Length: 68
Image: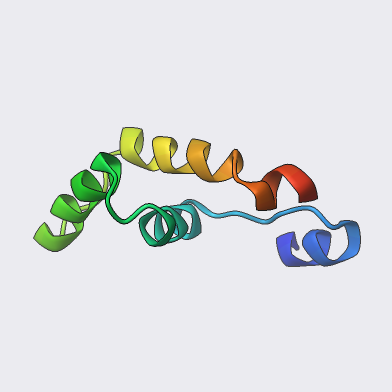
């Protein structure tokens, strides 16, 4: 359903996991990335606060600002 909305209406479909992956890729040297990598390498779930920070940053990106 979300992908159909994205295709039909040009809005961005963004999951929490997708936002984290995109953030780590786009900002590899940030302190947030380093903190997230510590959790990921330990094999534990990321705290919600870190995921929310990644979502906020990606939602402010050019892709999200121009497409919805």
